[in-house]
Structure formats: structure tokens, C-alpha cells
Length: 256
Length: 216
Image (tube, rainbow over all chains, first blue to last red; front, side, top):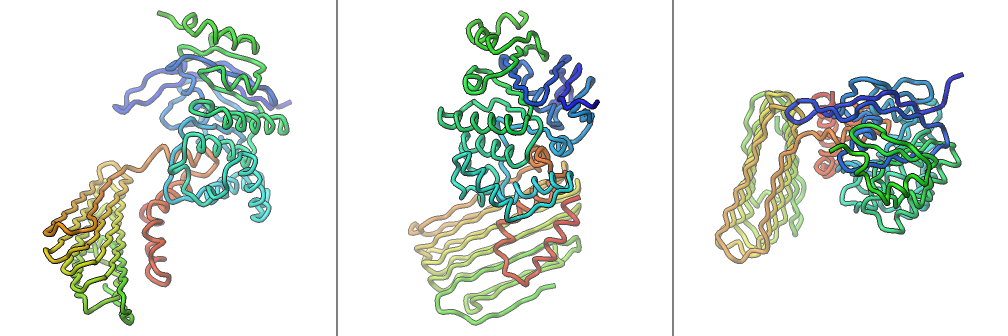
């Protein structure tokens, strides 16, 4: 039987620096996430946890040197970001790019069309527009944003809400939230958490929350918590482990 | 080739000029418009070196110049000159250039001259360049000469940016193929100019040129 898991096996990755030298960041990450499970990765700045997020999504800056990533039995290790997305992986980014001259609605429609092409499902514009309207209202965003250029001039919170809006419209199997709680006010954090949680529940989607703080984990209770340092998972535990980490800090997990 | 269309003058003058420079052939065009030729539109093709001189000799004229220049492993040059010779005129020059191929070179020179009797002048020059290939070089030179203290405003801005890998990653991370994403980004860059062009002009040719030369 083919598993529906997201499997990360002994993943090693390096970053390609501006002078074209490489620096190892991930040093053997092993993690399996089953559909419907919520995992949190916590760790200090510079531990490589965001690199893990971007390596999973296929950012060209990161070079996977060994190990593998697979989703529902499909090997994604060497695939481009668009293939990974269409396979059902979604990364909510900490600082999504601004793209001038492309309206949000055009972007959403093109992205959804690409996903539908994969499944062979026809995109009916009228019902898609309804879905978009619903998503805007769920995320409590004014739908005049639809006609604005992608992320251009959006506040931090507006960008994050649009990330989750995209999640809802692209219907991923696995969701990675990279530092989704940074720079969010209490209301926005509550709305985003509510929407992610209800989507994950309804669709039995796997969730990987990458965070420095405990804030988001008070809204979304993880099944598993992993402490990440020096490019790998150092220890795993349950939700109580997150509270312990909050108290004791990350120092115990970092050498020197 | 230069196509000119003359339309009837209106009492209060809003004049728009559209310039396209999109080829590798060497050519030179120098067009002088005086204020008797209100409301003239130009479309220029098949030239990679173009100069436009606009003399604002009558009061209360608003002029907009929208220009695109594309260099695909070749050179493209644009020189815009706006002479404010009469009071209470406004001018806006918006020029966008794109370069692809390591041998691509572009230059934009934008001269605005505000004469001593051109009080109440408002002028804005904006130049943006998108470099798609390392090694391609864009030069941007705004020149502003102001000979009266009685102006409303004089602004200019220039930018030269490299094609943004982060934008490409963002769009592809949402399932859009790299080719389609590149097309969207480059198209988005040109959109603010192209959307200004009137229908039935050489827009389709421009879109094709962009598609063929800049999105591969």
C-alpha cells in the first residue's frame, strides 16, 4: 500500500551563497508526517528550520545534497517548486515576494488553473470567483485586494492572510507554515489559526508549523513538537514539550 | 518605420505619445513636435535609437510620454527631451526598458528644460529597467534644468533591477510553471506602460516581441 505521508529521510541541504560557495545547513533531517497530524518544529534563529521549509518547497537557493523528500509515495527530492505544489505541498512564507503588475485575482486563478490541469478538473470561473469571495470573507480581508498587485504594499498581516487564502484555494495535502506568527496581531493570529485548523481538519491535511515562539501553538495544538538545532531534529515530544522549551530555552540543544 | 496619426485638436490640450523601440536594426529617428501640432500620436517601430523632442510653447498643455524599449542581445537607445517654454504646462515621461542576453545594452536620457517664463510647470520623469540576463547593462540619465523658481513640481526617478528569483520562486511555489511565471512577471513589469497604449496600435506586436524575446 502506498503511504499518504510526507516523508523526509536523512535530508542534507546546503545554501548557495552569493559568491557561489556552498554552506551546509541541514544535517540529516528525518521526519514523517501522516495526514491529519500536526507537527511543530521549534528552534533558535539560525538553526536551519526555515531552510528546511524552503528546501521542502524547492527553493533554488538550497541544494539538496543527500536524502529524500516524498509525498504520498511520489519522490519530490529533485522536482521544481511548481511540481511540488501541484503534488499537494503548500508553504506559507514568512516574507512572500511582491510582484508588480499582476493582480491577486489573476495570480490566484492562474495558480488554481495549474492545479486543476494536474487533476483534469475543469475550472469553472463563476464558481471559482464565489470560492475566492468566500475565502476573502473567511480570512476577513476586504475583497478590493483582489485587484491589487500581488503583495505590493500589503502590510505583514495582509500578506500572511493572503498566504492562508491561497492555501484554501489550492487545497494542499500538506501545509508548512514558516514563522506565520511573526509580526501578527492577536486578531490576525486568531483568524489565521482558525482557518488553517479548520482546513486541515476538513481535508485531513498534514501540518508542519515552523516557529520560534509558542504563540501559534497556543492556538493550534500540535500532536508532536520537535526541537531543531544545528540543522537537525535534536529531540521530539508532545505538546507539553513546547511549554518546556518555552521555559528552558534552546540553549541546551545548541553546542558551544 | 514611423507611423503618424493626426487627430483633431481640442481646445484644452492633453497629448499622449507612445513610443516603442523593439528591434535590433540600427536606425535613427528624430522627431520635433511643436505646439501647433497638438494631439499627435506617434508609433515608432523598427528602430533602436530614438529621440523625441517636445516643445511646450503654449500654456496649459498636459503631455504624457509612455515609452518601452526592448533590447535582446542588442542595443536600444531612447532620448526624450521636454522643453517647457510656456507657463502652466505639465509633463510626464514614463520610460521602461527590458534587457535580455548578456550583450544587451540600453540607454535612456531624459532631458527636461524649464525656461525662465515657464512658471507653474509640473514635470515628472520615471525610468525603470528590468535586466533579465547577467552581463546586460542599462544606463539611465535624467537631466533636469530649471530656470525659474515658480514651478509646481519637478521629479525624476530611475531604477535598474535584476529579474527577481524570489518572485519566480513565489509564483512557481503555487504550482505555476516556470515559463508561465516568467511571462507573468515580465508582462507585469510592462503592464503599467502597455495598459496606457490605445487599442489598435502596435500592442500586439509588442506583446509578441516580449513573448518571443524576453520570455523563453
